[in-house]
Length: 161
Image 1 (tube, helix red, strand yellow):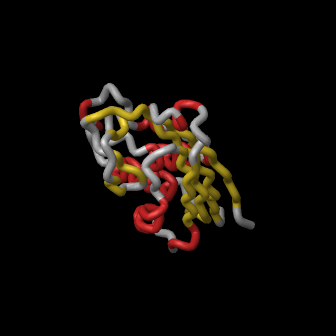
Image 2 (cartoon, rainbow, N blue to C red):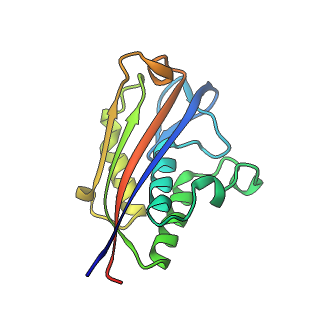
Image 3 (cartoon, rainbow, N blue to C red):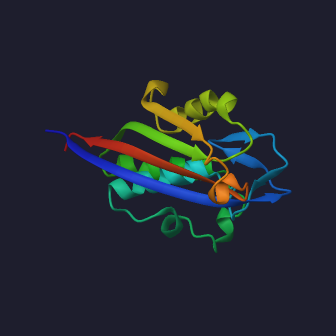
C-alpha cells in the first residue's frame, strides 16, 4: 500500500528596484525584482516548504539559512533540487503539484508554461503533473499594492514503503 503525504508551502518577498524578478526559474522583465538573500524566487521557495512540510522536515530557512553566505544570491532552483534529493532519500516521489502566484503586475501568464517545464525538470515529473496559476488580489494587500509577491504550493508525495 502506498504512503501518501500532502504538504503546503507559502512564501512572500518585497519588490525592490535593482533586483531581477525571477519566478519559477524564469527571469521576467519588470522594473523591480524580489528582495532576498537568494534570488528570492517565491514560487520555488513555496515548493521547497511544501515538499519539506509533507515529510515534517522543517522549512527552507532551516535547511538554507539566510545568514549563510553560501546561499547569497543562489539560484533557488538549486535549493529546490536539494530538497527534491531529500525527498528521494526518504523514499518518496512527487505525485503532483498545484501552485499559485499572487501579484498585481507584471502579468505572468505568458511565462507560466516555462515555469511549469522548469519545475517538472527539477522534480522529474511530466509537465501535466505541475500546475502553476497566477492571480491578482484586485489591488488589495501588499501584492495588490505592488509592494511584494507571494506564492503558495500544495504537493502530493507518494511512497511504496
